Length: 300
Ligand SMILES: [Ca+2]
View 1 (cartoon, rainbow, N blue to C red):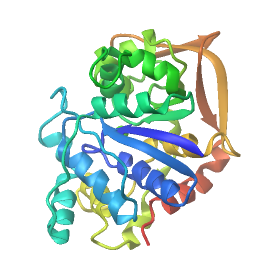
View 2: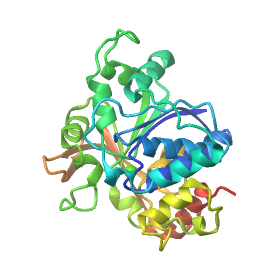
View 3: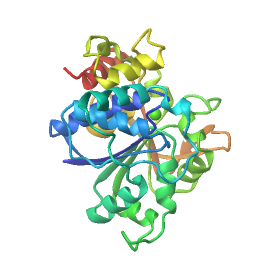
View 4: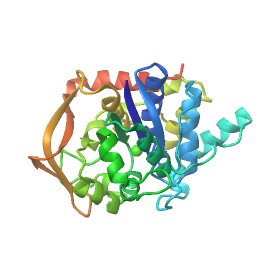
């Protein structure tokens, strides 16, 4: 069974939560085993809300890691779609918010205990966590560096970010933390499979959330991003997660042996001959993928 580590930036946007719901259900239904869920932003409500979605969908026992290492991404904008549903969820359950543990330390522990190159790492946010993990040195958890742990345990890294349609686009996930983006994209030695922002941009999903129970945290998150008027959104992170869980299948074409780089403003450049890959898809599949993403986000 495929093992997955998921790192996200759920908070300012809602598609990370949609990807999280798809992942929780794939775990619950025995398609994958989730080893850890971590966050790139320093917004605890984003992770509280992600934990609430997993709980709502009947998934427990997965370790969640919080960004306790830096506060680059904190403040109200990162609470937009997660604070209110998280507060309501735990208040209704009469439970305190979950305890916070360091995501980077959690990942070092999970990787050091795994000892096999069979994990899929999927990220749907800025590259802050991966960068921090790469730079982490030997400690009480492992004598190995983060780079060594990643190289020994990650079979595929599915990175939601960059853009393979236009060099004019400054894609958010690679430029939001540009120091991390330039390191992970330009210097990190491990191969990366990119799901560029042009993929999810063409698939609008979330329609099904209108019919879901009002106490489903993902439903409120989607409405919050649209000021309560609508519950649909681009499917950047769901596209990333769908490939990470199910592989190429009938939908995704994987372009291999590509060299990918970004400049200091976040523009993407790519050419043949390298360690990386990127996805594309035939737009005749848009309607079917929207249905699949909606079904993946459905609670009842
Ligand atoms: Ca995201």
